[in-house]
Length: 318
Ligand SMILES: O=C(O)[C@H](O)[C@H](O)COP(=O)(O)O
Ligand SMILES: [Mg+2]
Image (tube, rainbow, N blue to C red; front, side, top):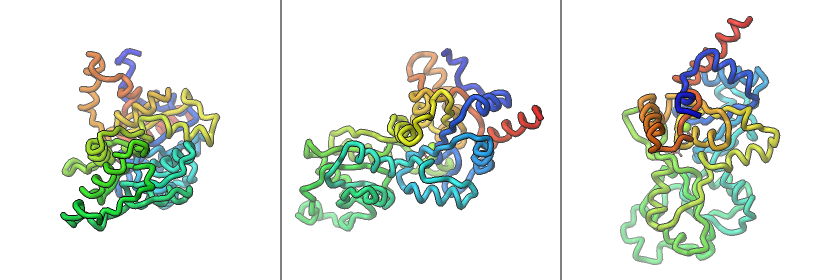
């Protein structure tokens, strides 16, 4: 497919064919539906519109700071009746992955309490790394046996951790110094899509510290990697990638994820990817200096404009 057939600015006609030719819509969350805590205009209405038109919706989020139930509650609070099985969040996915490999050990998790909740809900043992480390402000801790390292740790999991500290990176890297210890990461997003003034380091920033210190590379479970799609197909085996649309804001995760699974892809400009950056990427693909799977089939200003196109085609055909 030539780049001329990619990054097409969505029109009413394209919106109509996306609606008529597809049964399943996969939505990324941060940067597509909201920039926490602000919900984008038209986001909830779009979810209800697609549901009312018989479409199946799933929410595939790399965000590891909330549980499946947290997301289901949030969706219900904002006016969309989501069921937990529609929510494929990276904390829940990590627990499913450990189940799928029949993991039996103990985990040191660098992350938020949502990780502890989802892992313990499936019966996995956690030994620290959640919340502020009591030794974080003790400069002498690293020279003493205060570290209380657990000899039974078999897995280190790196997630988004707003309480990250030198001591946590030290503990994670020390555990990973044991060759048999499994190294997992929820995702490697560089940042959280936020307003221009500030840059909020994402899970990828935390992961980079742990990976550098340990000289180890993790298995990354979130987008653009396949496990999220596998998790959907496990419960809904009739989901057909050819009749599925992935809607995202970050080309390196969401769009690459959709392209690799063979879905159609729609990029919105309310999150991590600007129109200017997309144009640069397109030129790089034409010069074969970057991967084609970063380019979306379609792009649109925001989910509100996608909804507007869908509704206007309804008027023109009624
Ligand atoms: O981990 C991160 O950096 C953030 O959670 C990031 O925002 C991913 O969330 P998503 O866009 O996949 O909902
Ligand atoms: Mg996003």
